[in-house]
Length: 88
Image 1 (cartoon, rainbow, N blue to C red):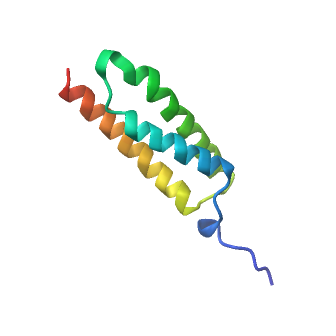
Image 2: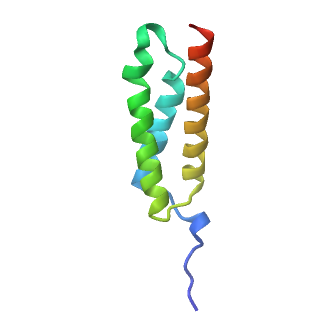
């Protein structure tokens, strides 16, 4: 009998933790569109977080940190889109 943990309950790895940190930065800075600063500060970090999150998911890491990272990335994209439509 195997005592392996299910994929959904696996522990977060280094990729998950770095992706979560980048996603938090992305959410906190995604609304800044003054002088297109979003393109310089938020979007590159959001792309890095998306890449790390995607790579982590492809390796089979499905932890609660991974789910939170995905939700933060979606929230950051919505926040950036709402901010650009409001402040133009």
